[in-house]
Length: 146
Length: 384
Image (cartoon, rainbow over all chains, first blue to last red; front, side, top):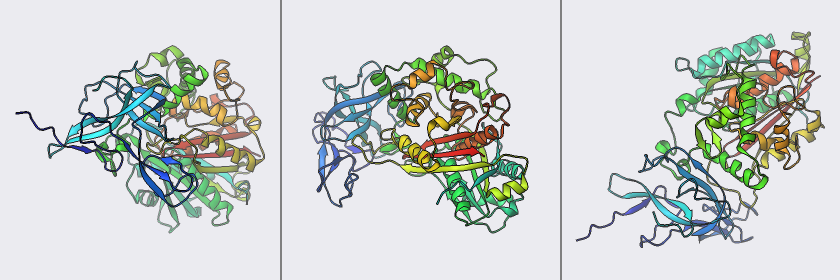
């Protein structure tokens, strides 16, 4: 008998989807302005560009282009893998427009500006109810699943 | 309405550093009493105060102000992240300019060393999406993009850091006062924080307080007739304007152009340009920021900031010295008082009282800070 996979819950609700299929990529929860069409992440009620009151919820990603990045030589706050040594951080330009700040999966030498990135979920820790607390991050497209 | 009928009458500050045995009230009293003595005033003359801090709980500003006595004066709390101190300064200047009071006090204090040990409020325990990433990463993202676009090398950032460490050695109020000449090699060899930024390219976590007393020129002439007048020519504060690529998540966000817009505003208001400025204090929490500000504040054309570093033009003795007191990297960065330490340095320089780090004939000084969120505040001061 195979063990049931623990339920996954977001570190904070309202920012990304958690698909039932663990192999499916998450999407980012964004907004599109009803007047000017500008896209935003995260969700917002008023357009930051034209100030129109009225946006529609849209799912964004799950891929984009790396605008800039760095590699932090300290463990990620709240990470399950505190001994991992460090982590990448980057800004990813989504095809819909928004630039998204995110943790990156991969080693210090695996990133280059302009490369294609894909969204995935990372398990940060287990909570007191035995659920996995997850956050979104980007990884280089075509890279192996963590 | 213009600001230029307001002068800085007195300044004071503690040396920045880590003070486990001293309270915010204790640090603030030292800085405030030093500023009042410098102004030649008693606290009874202060008509309004602005108390700036980032990390202490609500009400702390009002309670800290009781250290000076209970005179019933209006006190306003100010918090704009790292830019807090310059915003207390701006508010105090306008309180005098508007005629609301004769003498205003801008006071900043903080104990960042305690705050970094005990996160509080929303996201305490880092359990929020915005708080997962180490703050040091954000400005490194600028550095990596700059290197990609302009061919900047880590040596450029290291040279700026080494300069500021060495300026700190000449400032008795600086946290870091190295006992030897800091070299580019030493900065590059220090511990890696976030590519390409090393530990010596970053500011320390500090405690401290700083204070400025603002008033009308007539009072300055009466109390300190032997001194030049240090006028506030202009003071700007702004948040970001929406542009594509604005990142809404994270404490330091968006394109760096906010500094360019805030600088244009003070130059326009003062009727001056960068060519009229003799020294500049900027937010060098990370050394690569200072390089960007050479261009954004108008001291180098786009893509030419690296040349300023290579030619040593922003060192003491160079064409336009930056962070003459050591900057955030050496003098230190407690948070709330940081901007008032910049004002302290500019006032010393414009009075000709900066000792071994004196900029010859300094007449105009510019103080610039950015703060998370984000905001930018710039003040322009001149000796007349």
